[in-house]
Length: 444
Image: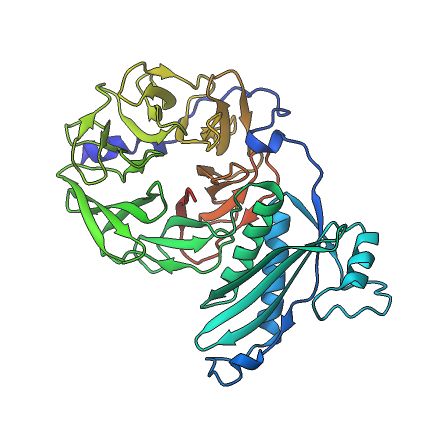
């Protein structure tokens, strides 16, 4: 079992101290862009049963809690996007206006005087076994409709997420995060399995069911599949699960340990680490398991590959310099260079979607694991999390680069959190009895 222990050298806590990083006034990714947040108001959504649906047999009646849930989720989505400033429209002096129906010119003028530039409103009703939400958005200044869309879903929360992403895209041209998923590993059911959840921690579902060890999940480039490794009695099988059909397919097998594949941005290749040749090395292959190619050849352990946004480079962890550090190489295995030089423990690299930063797990002077980031040219280095006698690890970027999901044991057992690259906006996503670890954000 010595080979198995060696591959997990990255979890061994060393005793050396990590020198301080560069100044904390360096801003990462999109967080360094300064702009005025868009002031938006949410008018109370309407509960209705249109005449043409009166004869239908909905599976459940519309309840006030359903409406409040959608309004609350939409409000939270817009605030978390960092792009909007939500101004309450149901509080204070309404000048006798009726805010329980579609806003007219009087409401628009009143909202405009409160500093609102956009208004969101919707009506909700059930048809058969679906929820239907007719969603509208208006520009208060010009009193005109800018979004009119009818959406359906089995449950109400996805409707709010979809509406928020449409608002974000209309006003900014940027794709929102609200409909994205996060995959992670959890032993909440007694064995270590792969789970999925919404970006806000809701709607958790189990994806795998196996009596043996499951290694961390990885998303396909188009977010339609999840890869993981099933390890059983010295044999590791790499599987892909199609989320639409729930079918799983074995793409690689080894009598040694192989980690789950990481997709290139174009989806034509995957990278993974394996001890198939005796030592842990980084390999690439086609997603169907063909055209296997070994990229590294070193007596040290090389693992945890992550692709650049262009697919031209791969960052990985290696202890070839004596301690675990982040290295970068070309996608064909050439031009290998060491990226991190501060500290004796730097692992689990995650390349930002914009391609300019790499987040990773570092260890501070107190011996605790934290989140750090380094620019791809190695000239700038920052600590994202700094304080506390606990470990923060396994970072994964949101597809828009505005947040990072990670694991922390700051309140005991490992749970999953998100944080902005500048260290603000910490939000806890899981609170289960078990250990929740190794989160990875879907690329879309």
